[in-house]
Length: 198
Image (tube, helix red, strand yellow):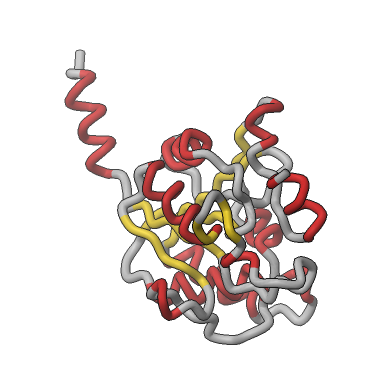
């Protein structure tokens, strides 16, 4: 009978590096001000998102968007939304990795929920929570890079989306209970921000 501890260690050793990605390059048109710089518990929301990635155990992180103070990756082509930001980050990552992708405007997202997404179904090419596009985990390799490039070339905006990417990558869904689902509230309007901060 194989040694279970040795098997577990070999699986851990085989795991790809996990890079956290904060999508923070949007124009915040529905909010009317820069979401990434909204004050959350005394610091910018972007700092809070970096911290939650760090606490869930990622090996490194990247910020998508034009944010020089954060060593970010600016979009190669403006106006392509979250998919364009993800393509730009993928271009800055050498080799294969698992990307743990979160939006900047999800202030209730906790590290335990992210850790579960990071560690579950290690062989899945794409993983998300049921009913939610983000957060997501994406296996970044030659196949997914080709798929990202193909989607970016689509003429229809609906085909240039994270949802389209997840369909193409046969995303696996993890279940959520009500308290977990509450963490995935995105604050992309003033009304939703006020709801969370009051």
